[in-house]
Length: 229
Image (cartoon, rainbow, N blue to C red):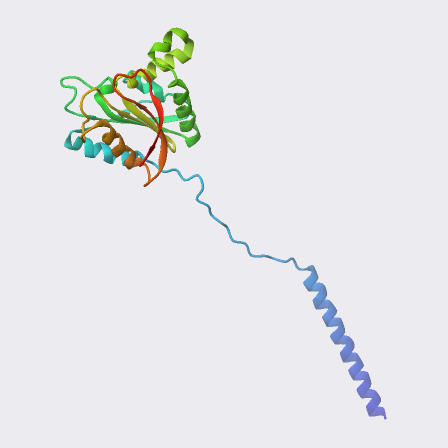
């Protein structure tokens, strides 16, 4: 009987010890902070596509070995008067291409002396804002100057520098492009429409539709059009 009582006592002590250890473990688990693993997701939003290389390739195809590159000082905007149409918030740089054989014996200094201009801004929003301003100004031409005044009249005068001989203005991303046209034959291709389409194909995807400001030789303003590659 004494053996049985001793055995029962030992079992009781063992069970009490196990119960105490379990409570201690549960208490420790509750007191420890839960650490969750996390993964960082990277996005590709606001990616800037630089179309200047595409325009350089277009200029190379058109001008060949006669290609000439111009980089203008945007802080002073020294150069052709037509550059002032790009003047707006966030303008960072202006690059142009021309034929080094034209004009002869003098540096290019007029709109028609160039092939294409690329203006780059610090954001697509600023580029778009300037394009929207140009679209608004294009509603007026030389025949309207008697009825408009101030800064609007000055902007319209600047815009008609390119409208009279012809040209096309396009905004893509952070950049504005001004494709120069003249009253002569195009420097590449059979006609000006084909020339315009070739330029558009360099800066757009297949079947992409874009807005352009377009002017033909002899007009006094640009007209808003939708063109598709």
